[in-house]
Image 1 (spheres, helix red, strand yellow):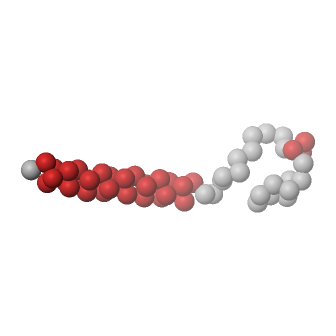
Image 2: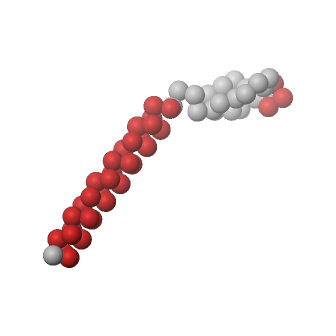
Image 3: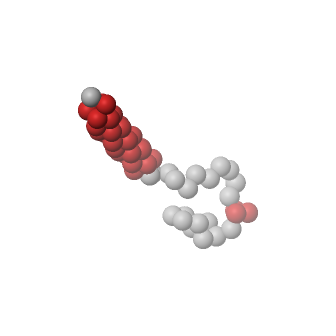
Length: 54
């Protein structure tokens, strides 16, 4: 059985099948969060490196 459906065999699927339907907002939020974390970490590192260089 496929996740979230009653399909038990691929031969019954007639068209395109998208298993992630309904979870796009979760992945978008996670991606945004990871980008923000990377930006903050990079800014902190640059600030420390700038202070160290004098």
